[in-house]
Length: 410
Image 1 (cartoon, rainbow, N blue to C red):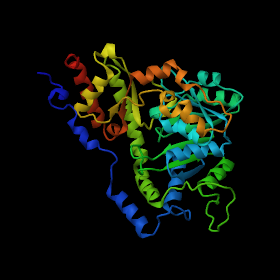
Image 2 (cartoon, helix red, strand yellow):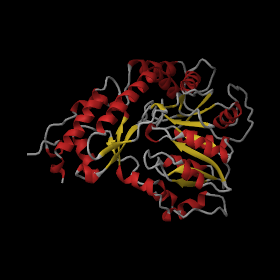
Image 3 (cartoon, rainbow, N blue to C red):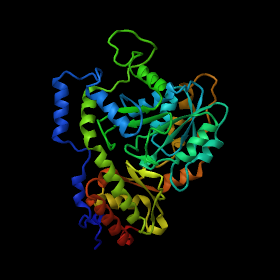
Image 4 (tube, rainbow, N blue to C red):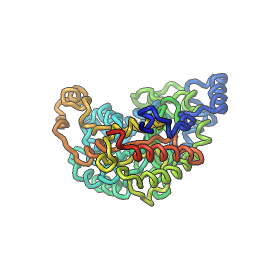
């Protein structure tokens, strides 16, 4: 009889149930309750209130001068593009391997996503492909730090500068990551973060925009707050804008959790490096290359390359077997390039763009490295990387067991 849990054997990683996410602590409850009782529900007020304190602390941790808390991560991308000067009909370069919001935010401001292939070794945006995709209509590039493993900013930034492009870092997966010691979100013109329920710092929803540029900060702050300036009590509105504010209860929850975040980021970095290295020794699994420039990897999920022939079963069978062993946060990432999503079919996209703007023929697009990564990636979630490494060890035990018994999966 098979020892695999998928065939009713004992679970190798039953102890991972202790790594449920998110983790609610008594101090988090107390912080939200205080905000409720203090009538701090709306999220605006003076500099000693939770949202403002969180903005300053989170920005400082990531080496940025300014932070603007907003309703969610998608909004943070949209505001970054608008404040950076992207206008209807402009083109914005975006990697094909990322969450749909990276590209849908471009459409939401009336611009056209131009999908760029990824580096075959890292699954991050390829700077050479980026530069080759520039046209006279290109206004910006969104550099996604997919999984928390950062894009090669030594190559992306010079390529963007040569063509005078706005650089928005999509850091939804990269809370706590750093490139050459400088925090994610502080290298480009803007850094966009998400605090959605699954992220490594959470408020259910929420986001933040980081920047070092005072003028850009003021633009985002106006756009976030119905055209009103930061700290303004009067009903003066200086631009026509929406309400994209984060609520006060979310800010209070984030500020409480943020007190633990630095330690958690270090744990994810340390345990992630160890687990990647160990999994890389299992035939059929290979890690993204070690890069000394990635001085801290905050990590949303680890991204592994799965070779079905070398491992001995399909990716889907491997994932199902790992989940049965107790590794619930394992998956296939975003299992197809974004240009294959129905949202980007010409008939669906054309009504959302200005009249006369040509819609790319996304259905005919083929980006070989993006397609390969979509077909072979396996992701392992960040909660297992917390603490003293016990979670990472259980993940490794499960992977080794599945490999040992792989013939039972065929």
